[in-house]
Image 1: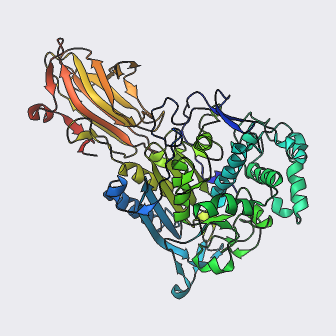
Image 2 (image 1 turned 60 degrees about the vertical axis):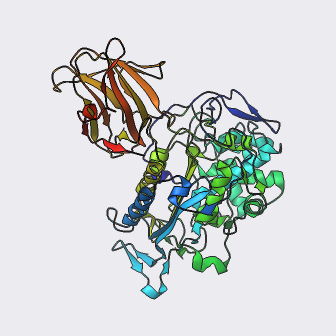
Image 3 (image 1 turned 135 degrees about the vertical axis):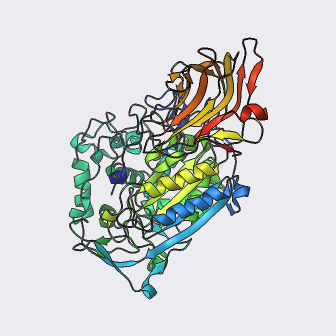
Length: 596
């Protein structure tokens, strides 16, 4: 089952040039049509995999300070998550959740909230959950195991990239070259890359579970025609990863469950990650849905310890698109492995170049749908303020998500049983966004000068202004500016007023002495670094202000301004916020002094 029902459309954005291609088993950095650069190739982003690092950092529990995070915002992450246990707005978003957040090798937050099993059934007539007696409910714990749903796609994708790295499969090869039956229905030109980036042309899904035999399901898949010409459109589809599973099993001669164990979970020590968990695990597994028609394709009752997805269930619980069960700590190991460049402790499951391949945007032709091999990139609809052109992750229909931000070396796991007792109680991704916003805010931004800088905050649907007084003889503004905002929606603008603040007009400026901003605005991703601003004033005696305006949807990490100075024609300061008397004349509306 896809997670597309949750998507409310992330903002469009443009990626960068370059790419990575697998040719004959060798990974070659070059110009691949539709592939954008991943971190490390001229971007200045501190991404270990892109630099070919041999880092093998392992995880330990520690304080927020040890992780380089701000504790109050991690506390706020938990408080926000707990609010979604209550009606939000009509029903709880989830019965419970496990939250894990960390940076570097430190897990600074690992918290369980709510219930792993709360309901015995769902009453569709009254739209209520039939609750179990308190003594039969199962509380959520840090080690509760979840049905990951579509997060399973990441494991299938890693297994595929391993085969590409080993030369057993080629990224640009046609799938039918390995599986001739796949070419039926006009799919003969679909490539391995198109399966991994959801550009194969497959529609979102088909009800394979209606076919009683595996052979019948395969016949449906082989005969399925593309909904779009291969490579012409992005359309998220479970069928891509089911096909990839069949391809992997054909090439290796092993089942996907065996591959998962032998190639990923056993080497990394992910002892609570597998398909088809045994009955002994059931008390420690979060329940999912009271699966009955018409909202479910199958009548199964309350699903607990078995895969929720109907197609995966009909495939014996082992499928390329869904079926993996795991816990938060195991997923943190996976996150750390990828941020390390494919290694964890003594184990290496991918080369650094292969990880770079997975985090390279191959979908630059489809703005808003940035996608590496298996990983989604820059999806603000669930990554919130953690979203950057390099942020990678995935969600699962059952309420799961994983987000990795190589630019800050941070990772976030939110595992919720949000279809318990029924899928219709959950809509949108508000808990995921709230958690990601909090973790993004927990990564400090140090002032460019001194102990504090002006911070715009991260509130949505607001306007914050930072106004400098008119200063006789002032001819130029200089300051430092740091911004990370929702692309195309939340601009930060430099403006001037000659009539005391009644009307304002844009002031063009440059950053770092070379980048010109003739509209007087910037926004989006700026690299998480400070930029030197210079702007000639449009007259004498004008008011000058920075204005940051956000819409009602998503926010970025916000805007910082530091070192505000006004210079005369000779370049001498006539206003300097570092001087107490000058600093006291700045009018802050929505901006605050911040040390982080």
